[in-house]
Image (cartoon, rainbow, N blue to C red; front, top):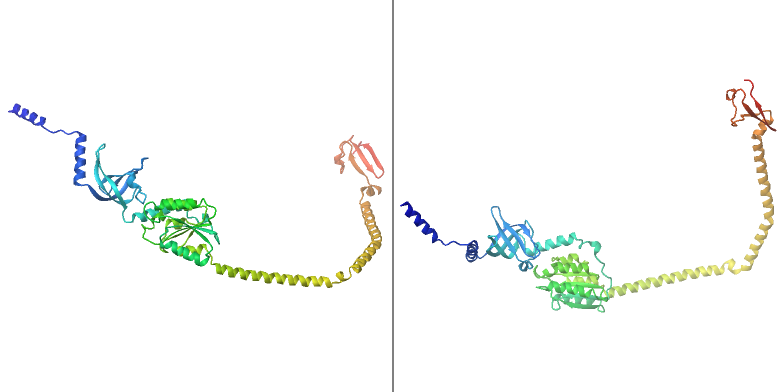
Length: 410
């Protein structure tokens, strides 16, 4: 019985369908893709990797599990915000298996931030990035010219913004030229057109200010003006740029980078072009004030000239010369007397000083019977008998000469 049973077991094992790992993986992959397919899944991004291919690999995790996620570059280019570790997202894609490692994963086709719109998150991310680079710094913004010769207008040729702007310019200063550069202001490829227009107009030397404008719309409609390519081209412009995008409540990245923001296209026209009639009136008033001032200066100068003309020096110039000649003669006559008196005074001062010095002379003291005694060997003054020894030679100075003697006793 035991032998028969073993034979039956061996016979059963030989009939089993043994799969290779690859075959089993393919069956699991087919099962997942057929029975689960496309799903929405929420989780936190972690272990994010971005190799040189441009694809993004990461894990989606919650408190208990994690799932590998793959975002290929072609899909990733259309995602507005930058994915980062720690973000809570909702992902839509196809569940599949990566055969090489046997891991199941979701191949993502849509990705949205959880709790905040993708466009809003993208806006905040780009705003933070450009602000850290200093593109919003007021110190780098260029002044808008007071009276531009020619304006470059970048906008849609069919929108309301161009009509609003041109109406304002025509009303304020109709002689100013406006060069319209038509671009798409929304939709795919519009950001690239706007950036190209900014770059192209910066090659011209006859434009003093650029206006970047469009009317209001949804966040999606205005998104071209939140693209990094447009922001960096505005920052690189050597010509001052005014951004007038949307309505007062709409704020775009272009508004923050531009040298000046206008709340509407109409306000942009008011910012860059003054009112011709007002300037003309101001010039006339200034001309009148200048004329009055010059007339006043001429009147003052004429009065001064009349005063000079009536003066004694102007009326009797020869008499003035004669008086100065007489004064000069008097000075030349009195000069020798003054010099002689000064010399006498100086001589008296010198004589008095010499007498005082004579009274203080040491020779005067010696003349009264005093003497000065020094050691002959070193000329040291002898002030006490303790300063000399027996046989020392000493030098004695009198009023009329010196003599040397030797000490024989103290």
